[in-house]
Image (cartoon, rainbow, N blue to C red; front, side, top):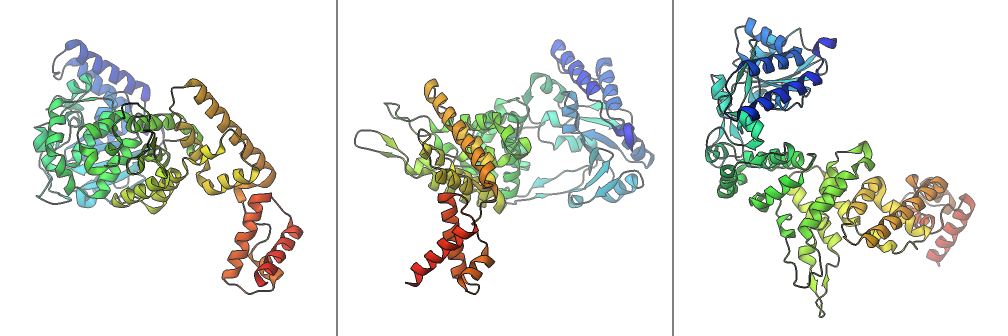
Length: 505
């Protein structure tokens, strides 16, 4: 498909600046002016495939428009390779219009009227006009097809997502003032927020997510409706709530959205461990604000994310940073002198995280990783002033396993003290620990931490058959490896035989 399907980001950026500047200067609800016509023309030039889609569907007698986030992001100068369309065509007709032109199609969303396709480096999602809503008490929307573009736009979540560019003529369709809201950086619903959230309660979560993703203000009426209708989120499936939460946490700056999640009361319903961190600060201020501390740790983890595999954004690291102290409310104790303690909050927090993530239907792997990081997040503080033995360093690496880089990030991010000397000392001490790990890794192959004898060698040395005792012998040799480093085959055999003799005696 080649260059004709390439994205022209420079044109998109000019389009966004031109259109939004016009809106700001005019200070009025925009109409289709010559400036906007030129802006839409720029859009069509920036994404040539849009025009080709329009021509194909028009030739078959179907209406089709670029819609939603594709229009919004392009107008904001954020051209993307995922394009959303809405059409009068039914799924079978959509496939017929794409046949022989696209590289691939998929119909995983057919029951919702959606056909996906890949054209060069672009991904298209083309959906039949819809008019769906939740029945009372239902966890899934009832999907029905609509008849008109305006009807389809009316059911969308926010005005900035209720704009379309009709094809192939390139007319901007903006019945609810989305362009003006883009200029004002404001989230409003096309109709009343109560009606919108009643149709799909997940839109309350989307409001929070877009507040973070777009860095927009949420209209006071929308916030009031969330406060009023938050309980209705209970009819939404755990999987859909989970997916919105993941998108929120993975935004460039999730903190404003998370704060809004708490302020509106939604967090109490979907992630109650977060608002529970708002512990009452004692009058002597002997412990920090755990809630604000957790948000700051998240911010700092994002800043350090370049250290995790793939360089981020990394959900496991971010979610562990957000939840690392959720065990504190349950473990808080006041001693006789007024000191506050949170003994074992790492272990308690890991268990709490597992329960919440299981309820939200996270995969076992992601759940295990987040819980393990929470469980390990205090391990570094046993390092003290830098006097760990080699054995302790080996155990630190072993216990972290493949999460070691993420643990590095979380541990460093967990330092939020305003005492510059203390912060510098902690950074210096952790630098020393990482250097120790590097040296030992080079000398001892820490990444492949194994005993000096494998299972077959253990059985040959002891003259035994496979069974539980082989595992016990393996564990003994692994502990010796942790304590002493590589022993070598002969010393390992000698120590194994001595251990065996002691067991037999």
